[in-house]
Image: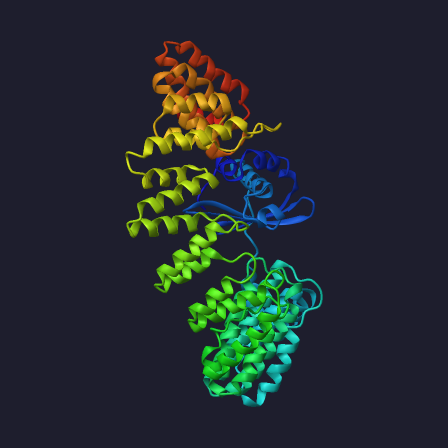
Length: 547
């Protein structure tokens, strides 16, 4: 087994979790090794199972505590690692994990069956996995009824099912799907269509009880949908009946399986798709888009599937708040640029519409391409009045001719100065980024940007840029800014932030050296070391930079 150190544990866990792990070393029990893996139980709020893996890529750990299940190297992993290192350093043997495979291979078939049944009766997740394997066993036409009964049995749920067991249920759905696909391949499509529909309905009615946070059941059910659609297409059943069933499922309460008209295009054919559209449109026209987003989404999907641009524009433009950006995108893709521009300008002019920067960008670009520079400039000016940010300021600059820019610049900066002058400062020290500072830095008006930040404030990212430019001409003024930013980074107590803080400390000492105040630089570093001496990772960053 490749080695690891306490520093490796600290790096993976972070200082806080590492220190907590030290307190748990006495709670580690049943430490075992198996190849490149270390196993143990740690008794915390409840017993937690820990597995450390030591390989060429370094150390990794897994624990079934809540913090560990989120992918973190937790305090329990730290505790197991520390106990293992202690035993190795003191020459204490770490027992090998019991060779379970050899033991199981030694059992006769009856004893093995008895053992598996005992485990299955005591653990629902084990039973589901075994049933999933059983469901994958080949069946013939005579066994279709048996498969139907198995679908009802293994896909039925009582009560909430946790994340771990949800994976077992997804395996069960996958095994059923595989068997249905095999039946479909040997010509039993009619039976498959009925059985797959039944399985989909069982998944849908039970889905609310699952923790499917990783989407494993949703993904497994999508494969089930594909088999059902293929079987329906092969049987050549009534397309209108299929259209009604599909729409009923899509408008139901279940989120899984996810069904799309594209899945069933072959099975529906032209007649089925038309029937689906007629039924959906009647429902869509009766319902309000504000209260029935699902029907609205289905209409958009249907219009796209049919390639009906006019219908899609109608759907997107419905109601008091049309999706102007969506309409512009659809019309542009269809090559209907003139209509797209009309919709973009309509959206910009809508008094009650939410402002959308994309509409202004599209309209200004369209006017510029058509040689209407004045129109583009007017749009950019109106845009800046509503959306005062650096990107729009840059767009305004790009749209202006050189002779008009001085006047426009004075106007735009006047608005920004008015904004910062009238901004209301609350009790919090946090302030939103200053657009005026961003603009002045972009224009290399560094002195004005610095004075604006001093008077009205700025955020850390802006202060860092300001300090870098200020350091060239006024190093003494840059030092306090760097020092405050370094403390802010250190307070985050993260390794990457420690590295940034140490880099700032280097810059600070260099500025002190430029001012001939080397002693002040050394005193600053000493204060850092004294104040933050318990932050070992930060001390290591300072050491790495020879501070």
